[in-house]
Image (tube, rainbow, N blue to C red):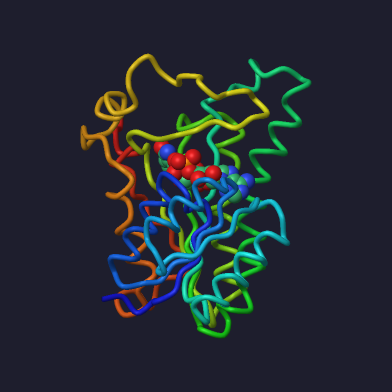
Length: 259
Ligand code: NAD
């Protein structure tokens, strides 16, 4: 059993975030989510009854992040763990192939969600995390370390997240631990973002699962639930008290292919 009974998860309405919610509940936590999809928020809240509360809102908004923190505290009294996770992928969009008109808008949207959204969530949760001497965990990606897991926008945003984790760990020590989990490709999910009109675009002719089997040294596709142990590890004070400023490469060994 973990020692972190209350967590707030951004992007908890689908994909990896929803899997983290399910795993944390299984470990005995109570969970609040913030997601921009009202429909997904309602679905997850209905699915888990009184153990999950939700706020629909945009992680790029300070007010929405503060509303999610307030909802969590109102329902469960505190926050032990913040999981910053809401993010969007750029479908490997190249700078060369993106029109001048779209590029600035796309940077604002992607960096706004993937990086600014994490920083605002951290700012909003800080007073509560300080009270509990809690911790924050942010979803990175293999793209936080290596090229080829996205285009320049996504890769830059995820490298930025690694820097943010380190600086936040430095700033918040000794009170609050800050760590990251860097998953590889997640079978079955991945969505684009509106400014590059990516809905329905395919990244590869191969299904993502087959592509991952080809790319990864472990020759296997991994699913969202298989990544959730990393979050449990960092949330649990008992087992990893010394961990802060760490990012767990949890990606099927994507950088270990060699030549
Ligand atoms: P997903 O699209 O399945 O889920 C993301 C959730 O975030 C959605 O419910 C969406 O509504 C929400 N969201 C998006 N923008 C938001 C905003 N502005 N405000 C509030 N909520 C917002 O995506 P996913 O694949 O589960 O991605 C989750 C995290 O995992 C992201 O940080 C992503 O970069 C990272 N990641 C994903 C993969 C992958 O292959 N899917 C690989 C490595 C890392």
